[in-house]
Length: 216
Length: 216
Image (tube, rainbow over all chains, first blue to last red; front, side, top):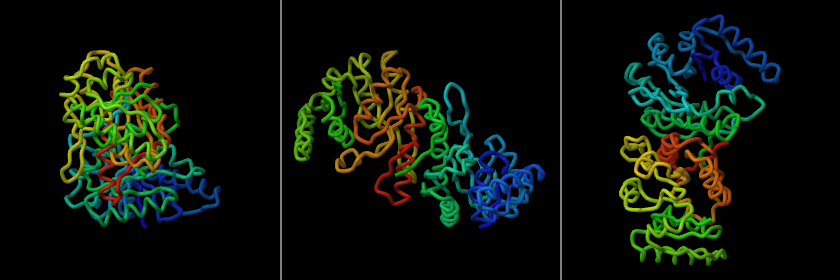
């Protein structure tokens, strides 16, 4: 599968690239192509060192969109609207949002836009009919890069296009141990995104380094 | 531990009574004492048949409050306000709410009161300082009664009183396989309650009978 990771130089983006790279044709996008290039070189080095060499290319975010059949927006919530409006052609792709709008005060809390969730805001910003799915929202950022440890977690996938959702579930399950669950239409996204601040609160109060989730 | 289950004749209440009965001094409350009595007789029969006899008493909801050091409000969200205002003495107890305000349309969705959650509404209704904790919110109703199957799930516990939270965590973990996680103060309760409609959506779309959760 051709996968473009927009914002691929962040912790989640690089982790996704290294987990998906050996199994798909992955490019890492960034606002600055040089940064993406450096990031892809580093990720390839890590993977080569582990005996799972693969080719990752660093490109601009727009080139990542152009490349991907599946485009993953691995960006912070505050970048979502400007990034979505600066990119073209997303309506021809399967767009995956792992984005969680959250804030930290005494506790971590879910801070969605008026649309109800990052995914629903994205739906408003992109042309009607764009095949948007949520996925990967609840996997802790630093788990992605801990390649020695299996991602023994569940991933809730929601979206309004059943075929796109099926493709995204296959991408999820191409990562060893990750298990995808169909959570229904995109309207379910607020509940999926809200799990992430809950996990952060549990990690903090249960003195765990990070907390993931399994549905069972 | 003396435990009073308000609304103990419902599916979750009876399940809680049967899981906790062999390990604690449990009474089942109901608005009608006769109903509670019938329910406790039935539960005791089931437990006796399984070789784990114990004594459960059926009482009024007020008597369940009076009995319990820990009082569990195993009632639907719509009963929460009237029940809380009809009972006295809750401010002297550790009050546990497993209540989830949710509604069903095309999807199951979280439908909290203006206070933000059932737990926060309860906090407003009860005298200041009442030791309220959430617990048991995300365990599927019919799992409680499936006594042949271990409850291999995680339970997020939140509340503002650290000592009360510790007691509730011990009650949770007195049920074999259930694991309690401290999720922080009561302000985290909206995120805990919102997990339940997510699990219902996943169960429906993933064609699972019911779905529980593990934090890990």
